[in-house]
Length: 96
Image (cartoon, rainbow, N blue to C red; front, side, top):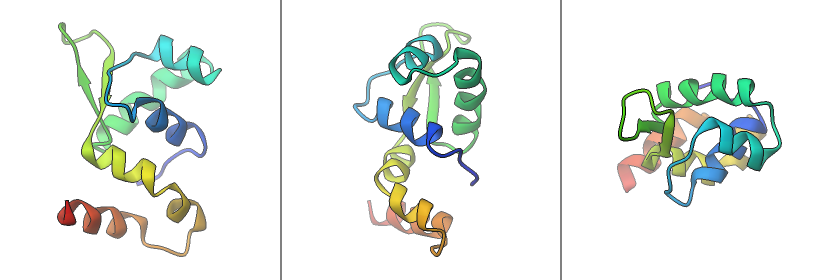
């Protein structure tokens, strides 16, 4: 997985409380451009780090997944670069 540092981790950190949120709110909280956040959320969902949820299919609400929580908690390993990050995350998911 290829993540954008620091934005993707900031998104995961903002959602780690388990509450759902949308791009507009996340952009405000993170002080980022809403359009940019809108481009990153589907990418994180494709990596199974977020799930798109909500009362309507196009509501734009996202919630963090178990895998997303593990990725957020292991940011240091991702930034070091000397670790097979994908393997680390898969191993931790199996341990859960």
